[in-house]
Image (cartoon, rainbow, N blue to C red; front, side, top):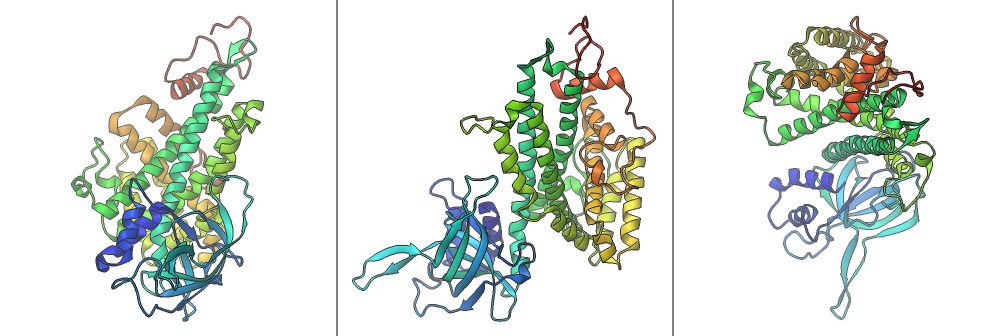
Length: 496
């Protein structure tokens, strides 16, 4: 939330005079020492995602006199009153919030949580800026972050962006907070797998080391494949966000499909195409990665058996707490269904589908492995045809919005994994790409459309010992010990 607010303010600073308090606020939000944090107060009692139901109002009431030309941060021109039902970071220094102005439309505001008032004798004191805490929320997880129901009464705030353009303005913040959600989800999955692996190394089952039991090895390998795919999706989305903000690398304009680096057809064209793709990827990456993080962390808990279910507050590797904490990522900044609806509406809006098709078709064409390319091409053609045919029937597409978004994400992950292989022809990268593209593995299969991601002609499922060997390489980066895989138990007499 702090990063998101800083990102939003940075976009506003060029239009503001140097004496405006937003300049100092931005410096404090991005400072290494003596820094500020920011909250984000949007959700209200009538609903979270439907912000048009907001009951908080902002009244234009500038002070008759201010400190300097533009005043301090606590001398904003608006007085905000209302009730925020789910307010994160209630101990922050400042907060972003939405409120309706006299037009009845939403605007974005920035307000400090405290203000300085002067007494008649000239002394000053710091008081709350019209914020009253009704109660702290008793949440399933993220208990370290205080979340509360807040009553706002004449909270002095500054308008951010144009009046009545609150949703468009605050979307800058949402891109960043959603990025934090999918990156922290990938990090949580990797941490969960690391804990599971460390447990397996030190655990003996039926007289054999747990790490080498084929069924357990297969479980860990499935998680590894899932993490690698979502890591590709997450970092590609972050890199595209950076390019849209700071300029594309010169090589991105090349039409070459060289596999030496991420360039050419893999990146969308700069400008409108890149912005359309970025918004689609941000929503999709947040939804599919966060959803899978919950499932993956539960799998990691199960991999520890009863130890994983223990909730010991003094245990640094507390998987139970990690599961509770990561669950919020599938909810805040848009649930899976909310983001699916947003994704569909965005893709079918104006010429956005044409932009996405231009980029993705070009990226798929740059895949050098013909078997991978054929599968990805057929899947995208099926999905694109469905979207194009129903462009004027958006409610039909919304009814399967979750499958549409997951199918799109699976195709993008497949493209990124295929490009990762041809970058350096790494054997492990190729095995991950094969399992994801041809076998349809990697955490998507349950939510895909029936004509997307179906097991390809080259799919291999009954691979016995050869599969176990690759499982061991993926998880442990070493060769499988000398025994035949027979499920959870290994026959007596087999050599480890």
